[in-house]
Image 1: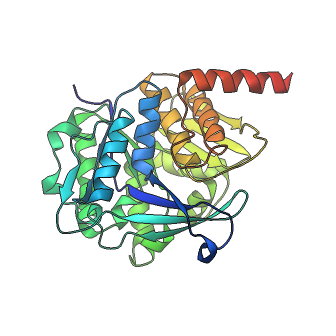
Image 2 (image 1 turned 90 degrees about the horizontal axis):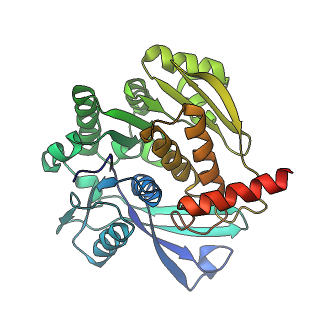
Length: 319
């Protein structure tokens, strides 16, 4: 049984300081995992849809932890490879103060950055209904860039919906002279494109929702979703028109990391279930709001019952 949604990208082990303040004062850490693509896959699986994550980890204890943990969340990990020569990547989270987090990456030369398209089971990818990519993977290495464009080709040739979240990481991009052009090239070929408004402004020089949507819809994108944090989300498609969904208000932001991945999971599940774009965006918005109230990248990703409870509570507040 092949999964409906397939993601390709690096997941790292996360060591999060147990206390607030500069890392130099932290002596205890909590171990978790985080990676945009596997976060989305976990979010999709928690909502009862099937998802597969393709990656490469070190043949080490951290790599084994990642695969075991992500598989335990219901994600198919059968296409994850172990590499004996390169380590599993990791990053450290520093909580400077409530709602403010700094992340330090130690991923250079990681096993995931050594992935090659020849190592991917493309028949597995070919069976998917949707492929989800981010703007992180193409900048891990030249071979990872090749994988991204092979996935795009596979999607186009087989009628698979291609989802793209730019998820820009400027520390990775700064060493690639044509980084912006690469992201734009991928975006124009996507069926579903979901940038943050600041990311879209970086790419095409405007923060105007309509101008952004027009640019990419005219380039061939069929569904545009433009996220604007606590303000809300603008959406537009070639066949369903446009609209704006205000963000759900939360009393306290505990950890903002992972909110965009939660949003993407909800959006993509809505589209897999053939909901109107507006309803898919609303589902993404609910999940994004829920994620920021819980520590960790995936700990706050909800199941259906949790979403219903959150939605009922929101309606009670509005009344």
